[in-house]
Each structure stands twice: as structure tokens, then as C-alpha cells.
Image 1: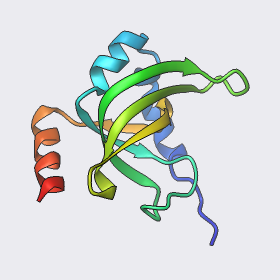
Image 2: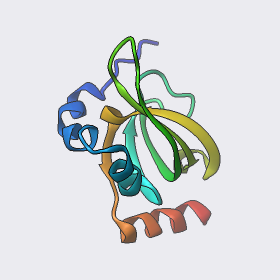
Image 3: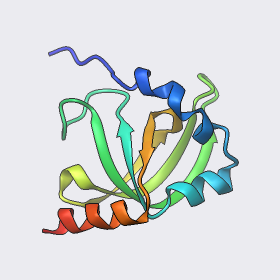
Length: 112
């Protein structure tokens, strides 16, 4: 089965996140649910659109070969029963950052 990445459509909307200094980006996404467009195939969701709660940003860096900005995070994968995972996410793939109330509601749904 061929999966076509759909994150390309959303990448242009994320320039504000891409341009934030590391400290501000970390503050914006930590303890928030993000909607993330997977770069490749996902074993959890076929469409590649993922929801995760970022608990901590461990590193913020740029790839030498592509210039893409990545963050290494510890997160709870809301599409996989809230399991704690460590992920490298390209910042352009972060499509949405939920507010506090919406994040709290997402966590309640995951627990029950």
C-alpha cells in the first residue's frame, strides 16, 4: 500500500512555530496536545495524522542535510492509549497546538 504524505499541505501554516526561538517553542508545546502530520507511514494510524501530549522538549535542533527543524520530545501518544514515547518531530509537521482546556479534555478521553 502506498501512503502519500499529507503534511505538505499543512507545512506552510507552521511558519510561526518554525521561527520561534527554542525556549518559546518549548513553552508553547509543552503540556499541550499537538496534532502532528507524520512524515512517513504510521503503524498506529493509516492517515498519518497523530495526536500527542508533549510532556517535555528534550532537544531542539536543525538537520544538517535538510535544514529541517526538529524537536526531540517525551510525549504521551493519544492514538496509542496514552503510552509514553520518545519522538523526533519535525516542527513543520506540527499542525495544531491545543489550548489548556482542550488538552485537559483530550487527556480525560484518553484515560476513559
